[in-house]
Length: 84
Image 1: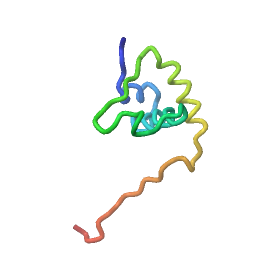
Image 2: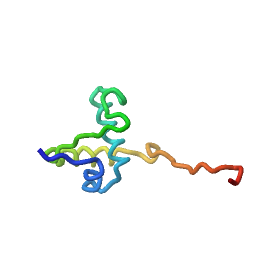
Image 3: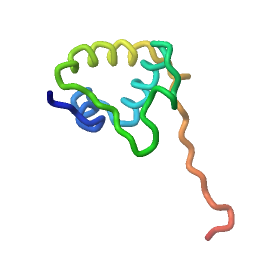
Image 4: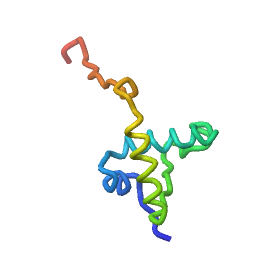
C-alpha cells in the first residue's frame, strides 16, 4: 500500500502541512482520542494511506468550511527589545 507524508497530502489538499496536522489532531479528538496519547509525538509521522485520500479530502473540506476566523491562531512575531 502506498502511503503519503503530511507534506504530500497537504499539497494535494491545497493547504500546508501545519494546517493538515491541525485537522488530523481534530479528527482524533472528535473520535474520542487524546492529543499526545493517540497522535504521533515529536519526531514521529502520520501514516496516510493513498487509497483513503478521497475520504480524507471530503472530511478536510468539511472541517475547513466549518472553521471560523476565531479558530485561526494569530501569529505574532516576537522581537528582542534589546536591539541585538
